[in-house]
Amino acid sequence: MSGNMNITLKVWRQNKASDKGRFETYAIPNVSEDMSFLEMFDILNEQLIIEGKDPVAFDHDCREGICGMCSMFINGRPHGPLKGVTTCQLHMRSFKNGDTIVVEPWRAKAFPVIKDLVVDRSAFDRIIAAGGYISVNTGNAQDANSLPVAKENADHAFFAAACIGCGACVAACKNASAMLFTSAKISQLALLPQGAPERNTRALNMVAQHDAEGFGSCTNTGACEAECPKGISLSNIARMNREYLGAALMS
Amino acid sequence: MNWLSKLFNSSIGQKLLVALTGLFLCTFLIVHLSGNFQLFKNDNGMAFNLYTVFMTTNPFIKTVSYVLYASILFHAFKGIHLAIKNRSARPVAYATVDGKANSHWTSRSMGVLGTIILVFIVVHMGDFWYEYKFGHIPYIRYTQNMVTGELTSTPLVGMDGQPLTINKKMEEFVDGDNKIIIVKDLYAEVKEEFTNPLLVLIYLISMAAIGFHLFHGFQSGFQTIGVNHPKYTPILKSLSLWLFGIIIPLAFASMPLYFYFL
Ligand code: SF4
Ligand code: FES
Image 1: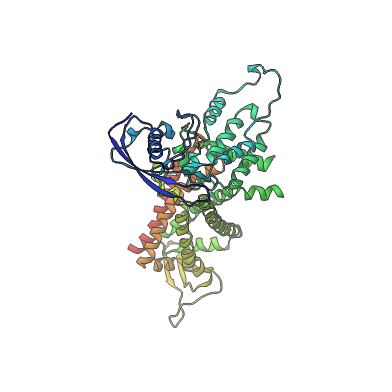
Image 2: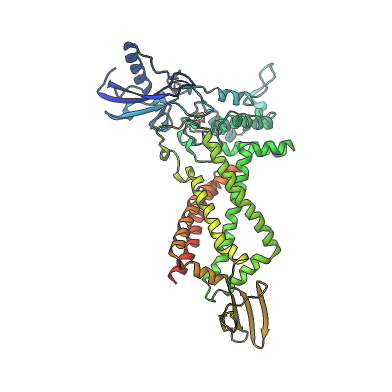
């Protein structure tokens, strides 16, 4: 696939976490507007390999907007200029011929750079491990109607469960806060009867882990909600605050 | 008590305290504004000066005012502390950030706006609160005829024309048909202060800062305490914009302007 766009990329290069890092500028000729942003990076990397240079390390997996791996901070915004998409769903038609595009990794103390654009997001895994689960006894599956769930609650739990753990909320937030992520993971269980038994410890432990990882605290700027590829709502953060304060004061 | 220290050392617990003190300060603004409207009364400051005596002597109001001072200090310094802590959550800054694409500038500038307001509060309290309590505010004598209602006022001066003071905030007695009130004339002080264009400018800038700070802060405080509801959040947001962002700051700003152009 080739086209007629000429793109200049300013890409963050960093060999390892302790490295200082720097921007490198690359010219990419013949970019097609039908290419995805990641395909353009594939072309850049082929170019670099042919030249005997180190290709740019970047995360990706599904390339269809469901895994959350493709973390790139593009021209000052996570996942680039479009709303509601991940980097793999961004296409070069969103840019103009001759554009210079700045690409950086997610930047947060809790997301240390591993190499180039790849950051370590295992802090999210540890927040989940602190309480983002339910205990289910093994055995036969229950009858589906034995646990009635209000339609509205089911809907909101599903909306919260749409979070793919990409970290764009942290990347966009001026405080590098992971409260949108944490609140989505608390909400998806708090709204359902299956989540009730561990409700209090879940809120307490997940928020404590969030803080311990070095994420900042939310100042309600709303940048996370605006940049989240899955449209996770700020109302989840208010729910998390209620869950946490309720658990801290009443349990 | 371990649970208490855990709560108030957690990010949400600290935000809760900032939100609660902030919302308390919002209610104070409304009280402060409604009291100050007496500045516009055409009585050479009698109502305003009497109100000032009430506000500085009533035991309930005095207690609330200590809570208020503590809240201002807590809100300001906890806010600054959290802003510094939040900044350290991103040790390496982005080369390019397109903040306006995803958030309003006021929400990203609460620290700066709050600092302007803190400086203003120091100036403002030095101008009036300190002057009233420890400075040399002249006294004024109001004479009101209880039959005709006619009101006259003269500065309280001695034979030599020098200002006289009494050793309390006010004195009230009846002399024939006349009710006489002698009271500290903070009104004259207000009038005098706002002839200074620089001071008026400082007040106007500060009121703008308060408007921008509260446009984000008021509704944000509710979100922090967990109030987010499809029915009520839009109401809180429009109160944030219209009442706290525009009407209250404009009403406060009208006072220095009124005296400057008087
Ligand atoms: S809340 Fe949205 S932006 Fe944050 S991790 Fe989940 S999907 Fe990504
Ligand atoms: S690569 Fe899976 S969401 Fe982009």
